[in-house]
Length: 101
Image (cartoon, rainbow, N blue to C red; front, side, top):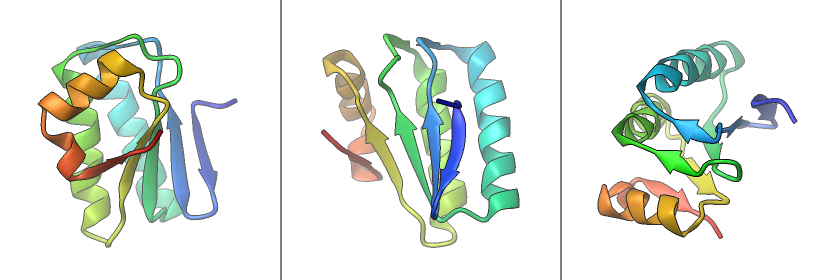
């Protein structure tokens, strides 16, 4: 599966094993290009492969939420394990991101 894929009105982003500052810059810029060029309405972050995420991962999600919510879109997180789920909850992202089982 590609790391970025548009399905219907959703941008699916399959995140890497580790999300740190260096990777977050690349992920954010690619996501923004897809959001603007493909005119997607929603973003889905797939954490299936992710075992480590620092605050820059939170920044990726928050930044895409700010962009997509201007158009009435939503952000979703899928396949988050217990560790990633805790990070999302502790950062307060559950208020703006729908965390799916």
